Structure formats: structure tokens, C-alpha cells
Length: 185
Image 1 (cartoon, rainbow, N blue to C red):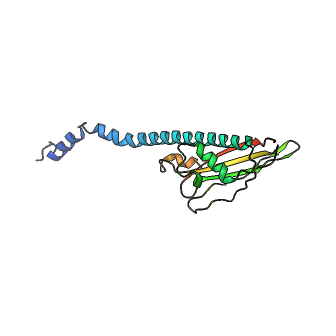
Image 2: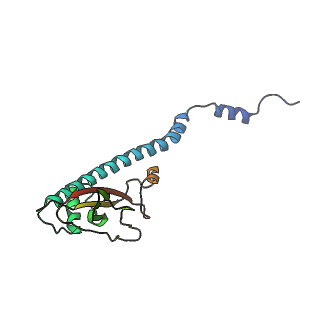
Image 3: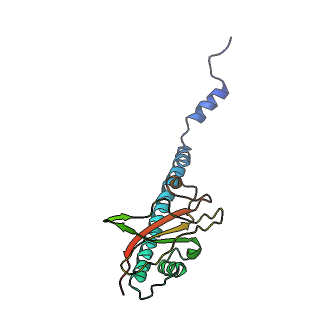
């Protein structure tokens, strides 16, 4: 006759399943990746906001210099150098990663015709620097300046990248704009 006692294997299995000494490890293994993803996203957003604020401020300072300067013949490279000299954490490849477009805004019966379409940004994957218009304008002209800075994110694989403008190489495009009136001499 067979006995109703569970086998040694089943008893060992029940004892093993009833142990709780691995619970902290399992919780850590489940929660740590989610916590790190949130941490990396917060850090990336903070750094992007810092970079963007510095970029936007640098553009404002450069535009002010162009606007009030007695030199009316600024070149695109001079404005780029003015802008890049004002940034702190974007200086490494600022001149190479920066694209500027400055155009005169047409005024027709109080209707301002600002440039439309995509902002020209550098695509590092194709090593293409887009041709942009750059007109310094004359006295009392309203000028519109768009700047695009291509930057490398700190954490390129974070989930944040789906919501930002990127080139085909994975670099992020920061775009800043400003308008000003050329001061009369």
C-alpha cells in the first residue's frame, strides 16, 4: 500500500517556496531599472533646459550687439562667434554645430511675414551644413534671426528622445529665435 506522505522532493519544494530571504533582491531587480530611467530622464531634461536657456540668452546678447553696433556689415561667422562666446557649456563645438539664418521681415499693411517652414539645422549624419540666408538689413528694417544648435544628448537611449527633434544621427536640435529692428545711424 502507498503511503499518503508527500515525497521528499515535494517537501523540499514547499520549504523552498516558503522562504522569504530573496524578496528584497526581486523588488530591487524590478524597481531599479524603472527608478534609473526616471532619474536619467529628469537629469536629461534638466541639462537640456540649462543648455537651451544658455543658448537662448547667448542669442539675445549677440542680437543686442548686432542691433546697437555701429558696424552694419556683420558676417554670419562674426555673429556665430558672438553667440558662441556667450555660452559656457556649449562651447566645445559651438561654431561647427551652429546654424544661423537672418532675414528681413517684410511688412505689408501691418502684416508681418515671418519665415515659415523648418529651421535649417545641421545634419551630422550626412555631414551637411544647410545653406541659409543671412542679411544684416538697413536702418529701421525688422530682422528675424533663427539659430539651430545640434547637440549630443547625455543619455541617447532614454525614452525622452521620442518627443524631441533629432537629426538622422541622433543629435538633438535646439532652436532659438529673435527679432529686432536695425537702429538708424
